[in-house]
Length: 458
Image 1 (cartoon, one colour):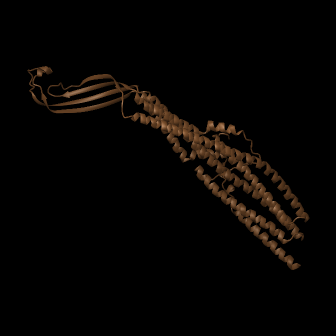
Image 2 (cartoon, one colour; image 1 turned 90 degrees about the vertical axis):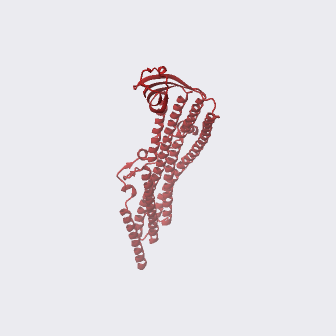
Image 3 (tube, rainbow, N blue to C red; image 1 turned 30 degrees about the vertical axis):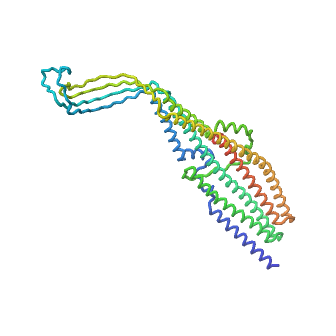
């Protein structure tokens, strides 16, 4: 009997030593959340940082600036243009007429007939103003403005995708944080059980197997806790890369036990998507641009009318010219009307029409995808909504079951296996509940993205 008692005591002491060693290692290894304590971020903070630091977004912003400049460039076609040109001509071996009187040169002059070299310098300053171009300039300005609107919509598309990526990863980290909290509560319950079993063991009301069972359960929980911490480190690394952030930070844990799980009618979300999704706005802008470009190409069917004013400065140099500058101006109206060019302009206009029809098909395709996306997310949220209600009730019942089993164990009516099993069921139920809360937030985030409201409702 004494030998059995000493054996049990040795087993018990070995278990306690093992747990103490593992707890010491746990304390020496810093928790990922507590280690990164320089900066505390909410979801809105993370969104702001991502939008400020994202390089892809900055590239699109430069494209938007280019598109805005194109509008200004096209508007300059309304304005007159000023140009200048200069020429120099050399005539060598020109035969001079013998009848100089017809040239206004006195016959008594010393000029003799024969070959003559003549030099002429010509300088021109011209002003040209379009009067009628078949509405080409107006349509090109509208096309450039539509392209600018499409670039702005592309910028919004990229923003929404960044917000979705950041939000989804944010809630993944939040899920890991909440799982750690559940595991910590479970470890605390195991510690309390160990205290109870130790007291019972010292009074010979429990055997070493009971201590071993609970100790193994605690060890399994600590292993799972370490695994979650390591996975959280990986998620934090991805999150830092996505935010392009080098400084240390931590995410503020959120409480999901009382989330707003109210849903509107599905038709309301569909209407919001029609009004807010930048993909639809982008395609409409591109369609408008294709229409205006088609009209600009059809302007070639009309005559092109320009007014011009040119000032000339001429200085001829020769034996029968006066070597001095002469000036004169030329005011005129230029009309050009191209009647036939083998249908080139008509073919270009049809290209723009085909582009418009292609964009219309793409618009309908994306619209169908958005509707299906909203429908799937909405049905998933309805399912999570129902599961949350049931899972909450299950957690309450499992908690009661665990407490009753714990009392029965103290009274000797339940075994350590029963106690470990009920504690395991309670932990599992709490983990599933936390996962449902997190899944609700992630699906709600996807619904906000589908309706074009992501980042606008916080």
